[in-house]
Structure formats: structure tokens, C-alpha cells
Image (cartoon, rainbow, N blue to C red; front, side, top):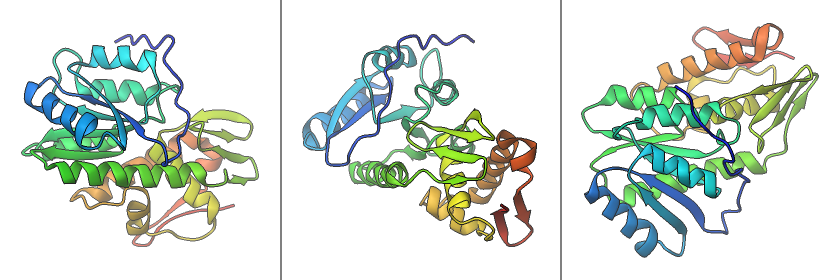
Length: 246
């Protein structure tokens, strides 16, 4: 499938003192009304919101203006929310965009798939207004902390956190936001074993019944993306966790 991302707006980091720009994507009229009220009325002092009903409309918005966060429903007409998520993560110009994937309550596997595809968080329908607000605030805090951190560097391995990339022995490598967050932990404290629980709590910050499976798959993906030299230095210690040996 070809995705035309020509002239998509760039995504600079924003201060939490400013209102977040949020796009909600859902084809259900009831949910559209909920998001419109949530973003434009109840919390208009915190957010600048826009609501659309399809992935195609979402892409039109993305071409016009920078956003901080997208609340993305899985089951959209035409292009699914999951396909749109994967396309956003695959393109460097949109890879840093925050994404909360909305899934059906009974589809627990959907949540796992969404997280593995690069969603920052997920929420199951139906949900209350206060739950959505808490998820948005939690994600904003985690991302802001990452963006404000000094970009760490270790002998041939340098992170550009705001840019969503890493230099591996001088070669630019594109990583997903969660991969970057994990790598920043390892570079910041190398040669120390970080437990699975610590890594999950630091990067994701919420409970999920399949959290360990999601974490291990993402670590495998990170090792592969770092290439033979650095990927081999990200060591798994059975029953203990992972460390980056430098």
C-alpha cells in the first residue's frame, strides 16, 4: 500500500505550558460528539482539538498542521486505524507523534497488536472522560521528560531524541519512540542490568497483562535495528533483565 506523506507538517516538541494539539479519529457519531465536547468545551484551556471520521481525513489534517497527539480508533472505514498507525511510525516526519489507540473492550489481542505496532498507549471502549484525561496527561509527562533529557552519547552511538533517530557508528537509524526511550535508559546507565519490570514501568507506566511479551518483542526489534555490533551489546540476562555493554 502506498502512503503519500508529501508535505506533511513537521512535529516539533512542545512545552507542556502550551495547549496540546490533539486529533481524534473515529467514525462513530457518538464518539465524535464525545471527543468534540472533551477537546473543545470541557478542556478547551488545555487542548486544541480536531475530530475526523477516517484515516484519509486524518492524513489531510497531518499535511496541514503539526500535532502533539492522535487518539486513533482501530476500526475505521477503509484504511484501518492500525494501518494508519504503522504508516505514521514508518515515516520519520510523523514517527514522534503521540498515539493512543482505542480498541474494543473484548479484543485484548487488539491492544497487544497496537502496542507492538508502536502505539504509546491504548484505551478500551467504553471509557470515562477522566480516564482519557489521565492517559493524555500521563503520556504527555513521559514524552516531555524524554524530550527534555540531554541526548546521551556512547562511543559511536548517539541519540537525537527530539528528532526520533540514532546515529550508529555514523549511520542514521530511524527508531520508534518506545525504542528510543528504551535505548536512552541503556545509554544513560550502561553496564547495569535493568529489570523487565523497571523498563516497562519507566517507558510505558501502566499495567497490561501482556506487558512482558510486548517489552521483549520491542527489545528484540531494538537489537535488530541497532545492527550486529551494537545489537549484540544489548545483552539479555535470563531472569534478571537487559544491559548495554560499553
